[in-house]
Image (cartoon, rainbow, N blue to C red; front, side, top):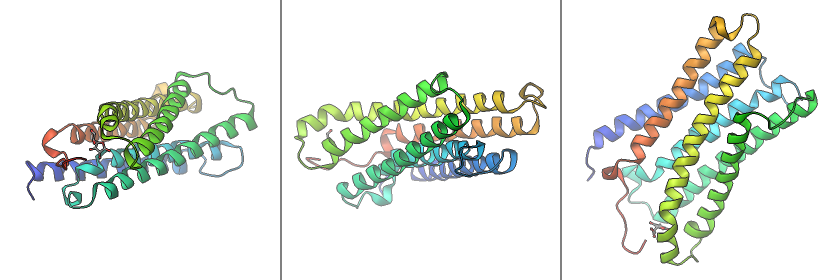
Length: 232
Ligand code: ASC
């Protein structure tokens, strides 16, 4: 495999997959063991889908979608197939993010809790809206065959920059959301006394941050980029 630093790439890829997978498992343990579990009935059980779907879709699946072009064993696959996988994973992530927002609004409305007042909610909603726009832009400009090469070349740096900006914003939003939830939910014993749930969720937040850092490193190594095909 003609790739500079292939072993280093593999080590980082396996680490990212492990840390990402562990983040999803930690979210499940959090809601199933420390919180009330999962359900769809307007109670906290419904709210609990929010972290599970966000971490699975908006963090883990989005992270994989970002680095999918970097996998050297896919370099023989057609660009169109790889674009379809990139778009497909991002679409799954978007659907999970939307369902996770429905869960929160449903829960708030059932319990008469106000919506959209916290910084977490403002930044999070901005990220979801930008993600949808990014998905539409990617679909019409890069996936469908109609856009001229000059337009693609013009928009590609913006697409790459926006993608990483949105991914980083999602990570920041997750950290704000975890903090917010713990300050609300941990009363006796309070979060300030660092109970086991606090230690567990702080560790989970660090895992999400490390996952983001690994994805960011992998995607910013120029030597690990998919070789460019002429006229593509
Ligand atoms: C695409 C594609 C690329 C870029 C390039 C413009 O649709 O496959 O590699 O846009 O053509 O930079």
